[in-house]
Length: 285
Image (cartoon, rainbow, N blue to C red; front, side, top):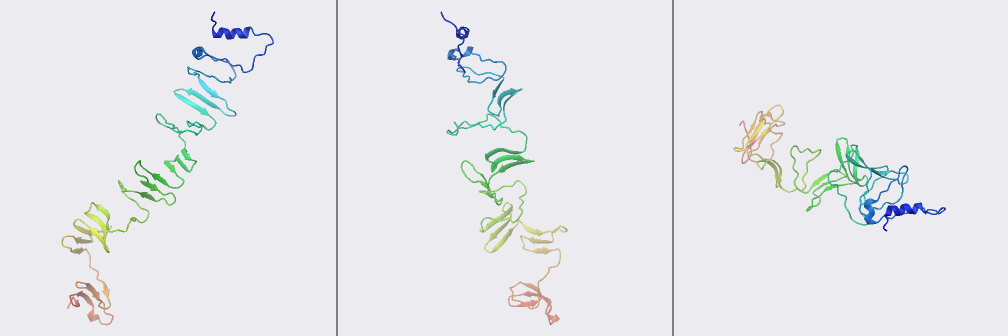
């Protein structure tokens, strides 16, 4: 006659001989095909031991582990599944560090709304964090940006704060420098383009070149057009007098030079002089 496993266990307890000592920490083995009918229930206190489920899930309102001087709970609070512990929580899918593995959040990873480090890669020396109104990227020294195909696209040097960019740096608005604007190489060519190649500053052999589409104009805060240089005719126009250089003796010069002579002993020789092909000539002669 076939007896159910529940009845067999019950009979074993009922017919146990008087004085027989029940073995401590006795185990009840449940066959794989019987696990669907297995229940473990105890009211009051804590229950210790191993529970192995061969084919079914273990269902409970909360799972509470009681390590020494610590608390670890898995439970549900409203719509949230919560892991609560008063010790550090480690996620280690690497078989105690012996195998490579990944931890992949299915959607968004969020952090509580408090300031400080959020992710530490190598203690506080390499971390992502939050300070008032700032997202903090911390490195022990340099911060580098790479792509799959090109390393070091941009480097922020930690000791000096210099920024190195491999290619062009494009600014949507103002470009502000706290010091001198320098160029990496001392070669000739355009140095600053203000409007395509029509308005630019350049360097050629021993020359600083200014380019304009038509003319050049100089202004002050109080007056516009104080000086104009016409690009077509080369005529220079001033809103005030032309201040000539003053000499106490006639220097050497080139044809077309214009100066003012203030002779130290002979006022009769004072006046404006222009250099012709052979010598200086007084303009009022």
